Image (spheres, rainbow, N blue to C red):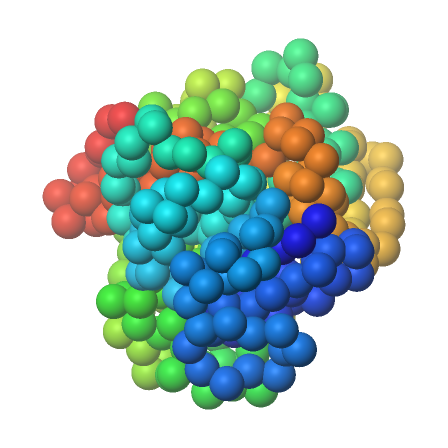
Length: 304
């Protein structure tokens, strides 16, 4: 398979490396000089010269929409994977997109413990869920100045609500769509950024009446945890430690940091769409992000 990766920041470089490890002949589209062996300056040339069957859009969030529309304008008919979040804001797309599939890179759906939790929750009556993710922005990408990253700038699609939106996606994957949300959040810390660094959401989902979510750029320990109470069991998942507790029973495993990306790409390349995040689901996550921001402004509940 021939693949094209648009953008070559840290996540674009990871996608390109993993695709090459999976046996794909990979070209990078970048307007700047980068270290990859095969680089072209624009999408038009990449499609004409390489004729890829798979395109990964991994440039800055605020450029995702333009890249998708350019691919459509060029008549690209292969599979497209867009790095999360889909776009900076909700943007309706024509149903006549020429792609054979468009998906969004919410790779935590492919984490073995998320997969296991989803199986365990099948048939359960879910009562409450608490999800937490915290990552200290200055040490997240230690080789880069955090103040220059897209995460630091709201205009580029940065901020925890978008940057760490995996939680919003996998909760929909586990619990069905959201129905209403109330939120608090903004730029609370002393970090030298203009994007939001702390957000807390309370939501109602199709399968759960009470979901609490906290996302932040301020946790120096770096944590990602989920606590679920059902009528029959209590589940706790620690995605950093690789541990799942069901009541008093513990399952532990070591997860290669590339495993979720590899499995996601394998599914996309093979057309196995069941676990991939669809366009509609990604738009639903953007709608939740938008509603959370409106909730902060109005200090009230926002319904879907």
